Image (cartoon, rainbow, N blue to C red; front, side):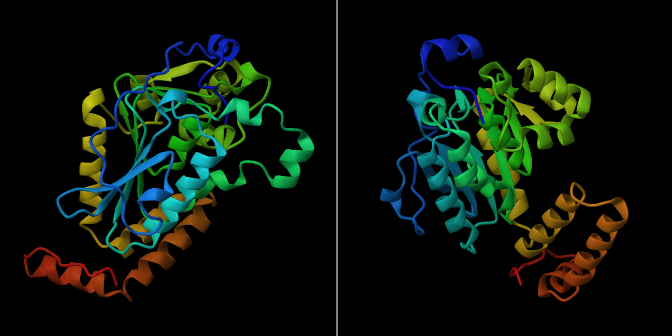
Amino acid sequence: MAAAAAGGVLRGLLRLPSVAVAGAPLRPPRRFLTSPGPSSFQYLLVEKRGGRQEVALIQLNRPKALNALCDGLMGELKAALDALEGDPGVGAIVLTGSERAFAAGADIKEMQARTFQDCYRSNFLAHWDRVSRVRKPVIAAVNGFALGGGCELAMMCDIVYAGEKAQFGQPEILLGTIPGAGGTQRLTRAVGKSLAMEMILTGDRLSAREAQQAGLVSKVFPVEKVVEEAVKCGERIAKNSKLAAAMAKEAVNAAFEMTLEEGLKAEKRLFHGSFATEDRKEGMDAFVEKREANFKDN
């Protein structure tokens, strides 16, 4: 949720720099051509990457606001994810921002005048969890600020890669509120109660290395390499059976929602279910025959 990208008072509270220049896009973007079309996006750049063009790269693109997560941006993100979910050629998704900011938080100016009644009636922020519900693997490539809603957005992803200068935090307490898009729940599951409490109650941040040591981030790379490495990871994922990847993701996520006994039962059901797929047969046949598997995703 929080962490304003601009404004004098909020800038002082959150210790963000006064010059919000996020830099140029990662490279001249090739827009994603499946619906929604190229003209649909104001706040996103979407393209396909990788040797077989099986990795979709979504770049948040509100540079003047340090990629603050406004309603328009989140609506576009949902639309892009819906389209990518339905694209059989996409096996993994990378979500990134700029080198200056993955996302500095929610758009505080947009929510400043909201009342309890407004939030309750509209179930405010409920649509933000689309990232966590995508069945395809999603990798966050985080550079710069991942604060408030930006940190929550990264934690919705399945894998988090960070640049060396990345910063993670939940500073909503400095604005007189609390995280509202999963920060209290996902951060606690990722780093444990004590550290999560410290971060949420003080607004303190973690560096990329600290986040890795705490279990929030899986790998840290030089700033200019993090997107490239995330795409490489996406390529390794996408070359496998997309059906099996979705089943594996479902099984791992079940570990956070179920008891051990329930999770083991869910895993077993999915494992048994894989024996009804052609990809499972192809994978095992290829192993026995000492050749590369040719998965058809069915």
